Length: 223
Ligand code: PRT
Ligand code: MG
Image 1 (spheres, rainbow, N blue to C red):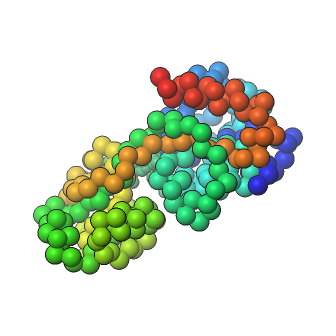
Image 2 (image 1 turned 60 degrees about the vertical axis):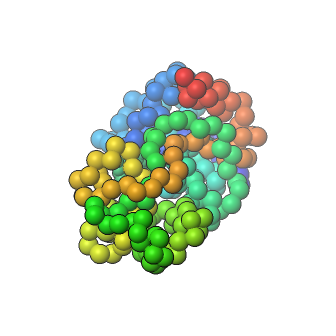
Image 3 (image 1 turned 120 degrees about the vertical axis):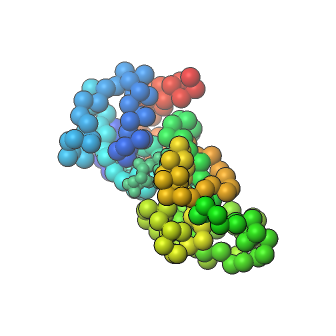
C-alpha cells in the first residue's frame, strides 16, 4: 500500500510510554531530537529537530496499521503486537531490525496456589484470558492442551482473581504486577522486544530519506 503523500515529512509512528521513551536515545544517535513530550503535550503530531521527520503518537496496537496503510512511513512495535496484527493482515510490512528495546516476555500466569501442572496433566479444559489470542492459541495447541480463550483488552491480571479465567497469557517485565496481584508465572512462551517496521512503498519511494535513519537504528540497537 502506498504512502499517503510524498510532500509530507517522513513520518514515524510510535506509542507513548516505554516505546517512545526507549526510542528517544536511538533517534539521538541519529542526530534527531524531539522537543515535545507526548505525556504532557496533547499533540498527536510531534515535530523533531529534523524538519523532514515528524512523529505521530498512536496506540501501540495501531502502529502496524498506520505503517501498513502508508499513513506513517515507518514505526516501532512490539513483537507481541506484530504477531497479532499479522493474523489479520498477513504480509505487507517490512521488519528489518530488532531494536532490542521494550523487552519483556510473554507468559502463562495463574493465581498463587493454583496447580497448573496438575490441571494440564488431568487434561482439564482451561479458561485463558488474554489480549494475545493468536500467540495463546498456538502455544496451547503446541502443548496439546484444550483451552477456551477469552479476549480481553487490558488488566488481564484481574481475570483469575474474580473467576473469569484459570490463567492469563500476558507480558511480564519486572514481575511486580503479577506479585502485587498474587499471581505467578508458570510458563514462558516467548521473549519479546520491539522491531522497526517500514511501509513497503515508502521503502522504495523514500529510500534516500529513510536509509540513514534505518542505518542509525541498526547501529544504535547493536551496541
Ligand atoms: O497500554 P495500551 O493499552 O495503550 O497498549 P499497550 O499495553 O499495548 O502499550 P504499552 O505502551 O503499555 O506497551 C507497548 C509495548 O511495550 C508492548 O506491545 C510490549 O511489546 C512492550 N512491553 C514491554 C510491555 C511490557 N514490557 C510490560 N510490562 N507491554 C506491557 N507491559 C505490561 C504487562 O501487560 C503487564 O500489565 O506491564 C505489566 C507487567 O509489567 P511488570 O513490570 O509489572 O512485570
Ligand atoms: Mg500498556
